[in-house]
Length: 514
Image (cartoon, rainbow, N blue to C red):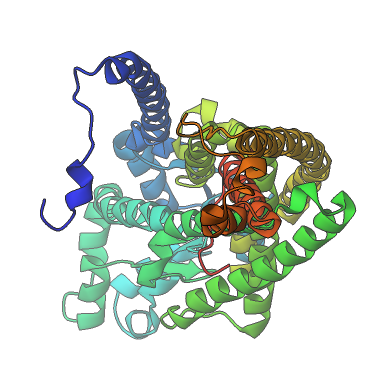
């Protein structure tokens, strides 16, 4: 290519013996890497697809408590509709409880708030009697409120992209129950309905509407990525900054020159400040695009602090990876960590196979449960689980990092000693080469050209050679000799330093501005 002429100059043919010798090694390295990556990504694909496998057949694990405060035809119509038509794997499980367990609807809301159930459905007291009165028209029809018959309670902040299944299913149950109610009370209703009263006719054709009490409405579009892209970006943000820090440490050779305690303290302070700023940006972005979401400033502060803890957990976890996992395997560790964390919150465990419940221990699952509790004002009381998991990861990973710094400094010192030894040997070799050349010259031999020349002692007897002698003495002047040695030593030192940085035991990015 004419723009890059050097790219084709002095190149060896594929048939060259030197190329043929290294070709097998290159193919072997590429093949092994390809096999490892294919196996890894096949396992990750299988893992993430498995968590979503037959999601609809697990909907029955979403439990809904049902209490019939009416104890009459309306409640019976719901009961029969569920048992005879809708009960199955693809419909939320309705669990009926006696009035004695939940004497008031407020206790049902508390049960949903404490995540004992995904939702609650109840029939209001005297619902059947009020409906019968409305069918007769008159004052009963005018005072009848069809929205005060059936009520459901749920929390949309709890997996907002998934929990919408429940109100849709309960709306279907309510619509089917109207037909069942007409079958149970059809003839009596027709005989008692006041056909001359519009309110009575309206009550007969549309006896009730399902009323929804949503503890924390969460309808903004960004809700779909709170448990996916937001978590992934937080993880990547920590990894790339850690790689940058490692690049700076490698360029300045900190692990071979600075005390481990200073490195540990400095990296800890940097990680705390950086994750504080990163979590501030994340929380700020969530709030900036909340789209009318009913959350306040206190919840924003708690969200910020929670994300700060989560970011720091992942920073020190990646740091521990970098110190104990060989650098070629770090990309594999990164993508595995990301998939395992996202897989723990992609769906509620009620909709995944039982195997995936081990993900309770993942930091992403803990932080999402903590955030739901913050956003819904305490209606996901898992703080006692989430904070110990996050702090447990933070402390254990930090301890691994501390030990890893001492380990890294130890091996960096050994590498520096070996580098210095090789450097001294090369300098000694250069000195020996120049010394032999100087001695050969004084004996009248040119070591480089292999030709005899006039020794210095003989040249003194020939006045005609005074100018040549001065020129030769200038060429072999002691200052020039020292400068040659200095240039060789500097070149060797630079070469060894570059090799040392490139051979770093930790994954890092070079920082050109340093």
